[in-house]
Image (cartoon, rainbow, N blue to C red):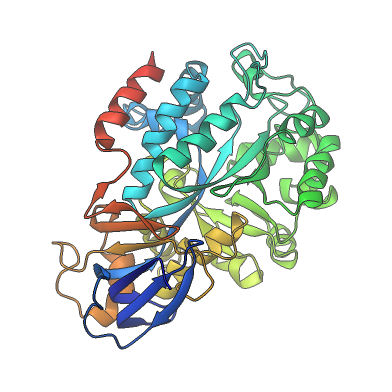
Length: 446
């Protein structure tokens, strides 16, 4: 017998919108069965009116960057001046303050339909670089914060060892560094997965991990069949410095040291050569685009279309959380490409939703999520089709409405492992998310 039955007024089934779908959830939190053509809710079913899609995957997050929203929009500046504000907030984090902030941020994500977050985590130690009594206290705080907010997490524990090519960490970065990739691997091996949490790895960037130590991080991930993510060619300055230090691009350097592959995801992949694109696509290395952050930091528009055609699967992330809205990330990827190319229609709404769901979850090590089908994790979200933004179009155009008109504010329900986390626009575990955000941000701004 199913644990719960949900009746979906309209369901996006990867290629089309189906009206009247009954979805049974089993006791293990997976989809037991889907039945189409169910015109009215079965007795006792939970009714989800609107368009239900698989839960959204936020494949790239720095939770503490949420404290920078609006602060870094004052006046003008560059990526590098933005980074100075980021360091100030990072210095004020403790395991307790980070738990409170991340819990609020992950609750905001749940309200936006996100059921799984890839947390690119590099604030490991106390200010000055001394380890906490539990050397993974900060990572554990993030894992517990995700549980408290009701969503899944892939903790992408990040090796961050240098300030630049041949440069020791600066004072702000000491709490990021384990000293060596071997020491990083020893520490991160103490983190254990649990039902809602997977443990992955990350290389902060080629400038932050010496070339001779890249293979250590890649080997750790390979031995555990774990996701491996890396910031890649986000800035032209990174490319120029890499060329000066190694005579090759960051992508070529990663290829030389065995980092690329189908479990690896390059984040941003903005400033690439033709050779870089061929290396990433040919190795099936993924690409995580973060359009709202990339435009906020004036990074540029990455060649997402060319990368996908070369064989690189696309996922999406909200990164610095200038906004938390995966529908906007999907929309922005298409609209950015239109602005650059002066042509329309690079991705269908179905393809963009796939990047925000199935391909995002796969990039985070959960290929069993992101689909409304029997056997998949019972993680899904419902988008209103009767708001001021979404009213009017025919329901069969629900995918187009979701991607090109809806926002995070139109999310009505979020279900994780068959349990309501957001019901009728309200979080069931964090009663007042705005207050939680305000209090936790004030605590780390100093």
